[in-house]
Amino acid sequence: MKIAEGLKMIENGWIRKPKGFRVKFDKLTAAGFEVGYSPPLSDAPLTSDVTAWRYAWKLGQATRTGAQGNNPGVLYNIVVVDDLDRPVRFYGTGELELYNPKPIDGGNGHKAE
Image (cartoon, rainbow, N blue to C red):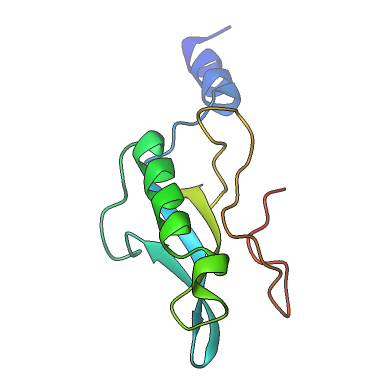
């Protein structure tokens, strides 16, 4: 096999490393639910999934539905996503995590699949 062929096989079969991470959520506003990201899409992503998950957990704790009710500013369906907007598995368990889950009308929010 030629080297170019082998490199193509490696590229197609290799596990892709994400180029960054963001926390994605549904935010309740006075106008309804809006999808948001932190950091915003216009800013550089976080470089560590551990940092992103810790941040997501803190956002979830700070805006828990039990503490805030159904008020504007509450965040639901908080999940860590990669640079392609795909959910990232939690580093501690290997499972997909979702903080403050809530079905959103017209869709299923960002439920972990």
